[in-house]
Length: 365
Ligand code: UD1
Image (cartoon, rainbow, N blue to C red; front, side, top):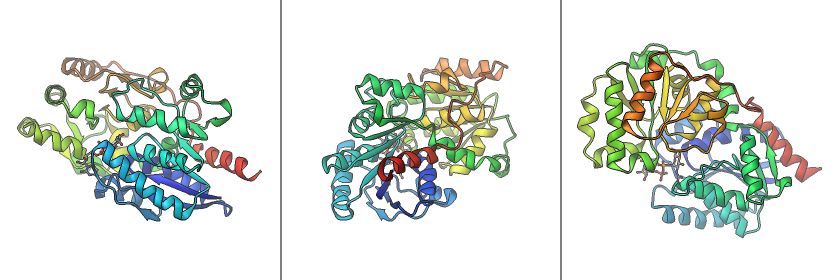
């Protein structure tokens, strides 16, 4: 059984790690790891291979950054060449980035079955590039591995047959569970001179938040007020760093004495930064899930979430990108209000095992 596991962007690496490790246990599986190169900076890619113990990619397509159409098209051209040459029995894609959709679409046109891990999530907001990627990938997949029950409902509503849908839990949490012993390490806090539960972690990278000057400036103005009360750690995504410069907001950032701006953090550092934070302010999908598992309050700086279970069961609250709202909601939490939650069903560290077991059952039995 020849399987190509596809990664392209930072969150893909965290999601693929438990699957690659599980597949290594079975001789019957011949797997290759293919990296499209959508993310290429050391901090956005290589550091995750090192920390997560992932094997180096067998194939690196070296695509890099481009517009949506150009990036998607380049990945498709290169992935088609690879697929015609290596002839996989299955293409496994994770998440919702351009690499996910591009490889799923290429495989479907070559009649190669696609397995989609993290299927069925919907924000119902088609202005989000990831929503388009999710809808297309799910429509083309033969195996849809879902992280939560809401995802199953979304897929059935879209007419996807039930026998293709497998509720397996959350692979990102598999990785977190495998690293939980390392959370207590305080090197990161020492590095930035921060105290446990006495700082905020802030991350931002969605086009809807950072590609519009008024929105980005409003968010930073809220941070300006917040950092007067508590230090804020801000690992800055390359897209955001670029926009801060484009929009002339460097001075605003540099004027905040309690805002610690740093390069994107590696996996472990980010985990420690989340686990020890008093509050996490973010627009990341993965961090909404990770904070839910960690029991850390998360304020999501978006108008919606494709991960509603983090709100209904977890510690997440979706508050939008308005400056006043961000400041008010943060202040409420700083003054003692809390968001309590529980760990959602099957977010137990075993999702990779379930996925591989379903695939083996289907192909071998
Ligand atoms: C992508 C995903 C997003 C995911 C995010 C995680 C899509 C449509 N978006 O967004 O869903 O949440 O990754 O990080 O697939 N850049 C660098 N170095 C890199 C990578 C990017 O400098 O290693 C810069 C480039 O200027 C690039 C910009 O960041 O143009 C955006 O990169 P891109 O991969 O297009 O989207 P992300 O915003 O990273």
